[in-house]
Image (cartoon, rainbow, N blue to C red):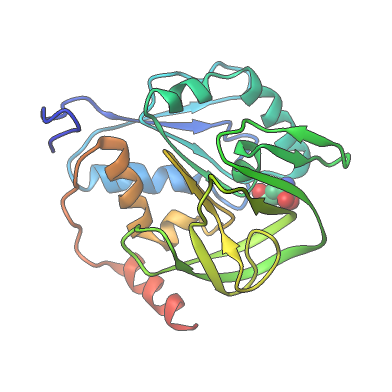
Length: 243
Ligand code: GLN
């Protein structure tokens, strides 16, 4: 594997699992496991750093992964992230992958469990307010970003509704189920620079292995050896075909 600099990469890929005790709802910590396994199947080393909210985030990660969280856990994660060096790591070129509460936390603002609007990290140009009716259910979304697969599958469960600003692009458009703002046919997820975020659980990288590889390629700065089509790809295709 040849990295961004053209020099073969010898060091392990550093994946930082951000506050898994708070941001791990619906098995989202499984996303980290999928990333690690897909590197190891190719003979590449991964170093997974699971960092608790009581510890500082390392700045030298290649890929920072945030999952979903219940409202109170999300609030605690916000306090930790505010103190953290995540924005500096992103400015230095690290990639970020965030799900649901993770997406909301990286935005400009979000309405907390108390109804009060809290400032987010501002890494994504989006704002989140409370929806009248919680979004729960299966989602299919046609990708609008070049991530190498046409349809994303996952399930959503969130009480916040998100609107993107001009600097953030949607990751996809929902064709079944409801998107960021609770509408079918509306935007799903967000992409801005090194940050990719989605509302989808599953874990979403287990359901969409191509998305996992796309993130890994960006994190290592090089193309990865293609993997043979396996059972995870079959399941993705079967779900996507349900339309
Ligand atoms: N607590 C947030 C909401 O309900 C995020 C939920 C989640 O991560 N599943 O909108």
